[in-house]
Amino acid sequence: MEASMTKRAALKRQAREFGVLDTKQFIEDSKVRQMPRHAGWSPYPSNDERDQGYLKTLKPKSDGQAELMTAMDEYNLVMALGPAGTGKTYLAVAKAVEALEAGKVGRIVLSRPAVEAGESIGFLPGDMEDKLAPYLRPLYDALSDRLSMKRVKALMAEGLIEIAPIGYMRGRTLNNAFIVVDEAQNCTYVQLKMLLTRLGWHSTMVVTGDPHQSDLLPGVSGLSDISERLEQVPDIAVVRLAERDIVRHPLVASMIGVL
Image 1 (spheres, rainbow, N blue to C red):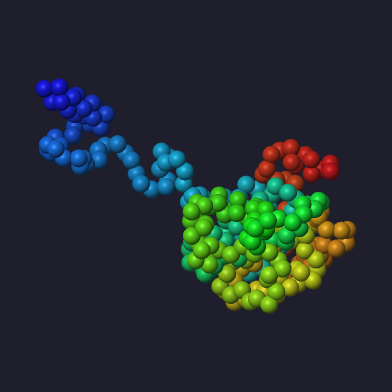
Image 2: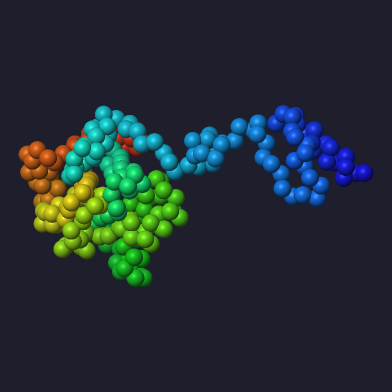
């Protein structure tokens, strides 16, 4: 008797929440129930009730970012120069993921110099991946913001996403790939020349960096010299972002202006 009353109460409650239900779907001793058709739930990522979705629309937040995004769509080689917080790395990695998901390229290659920011942290334990992980962490962060970490690990296991230091790029030809060279201000002229000549067929390369924030000795960084020379080449885009393009905390723009 109590079970029957409980069942009727549940039916009335669901009828109030979702409208009139077909009671024929409730078969005795059955654990299968049809989902209510009046709840308005949708499995698509655009539904606001979902906790998190990784199919985010990439939109520029400044004129400089809009220029950079357009350049990455139209040119095979793009130099993105600007201060910290202008979204250079994030936009480049996001465009790389977008191209991979759309089938425009076969793989993503991310490269970054393993240079300490002004201090020596000594030897790191583990194998090569463990030693390089602290230097390549910003690239993992940008990837995980566009894809779930599970998907990132799966793509890396398949070889569709490769993260490598600058030292392992010599001698390679990168065809059908989207290459992102991050923190290029910590590369010498010879290193940048070597990296730029890795570009192969059906590939796009984006080189990001801040010429005023190098961790190398004065005069060693080759980013400024390389960018000035390449600016004269018609099929290469050199996008210079400024303080007005900083999308990080507002204090970052204020500090950049006085430091």
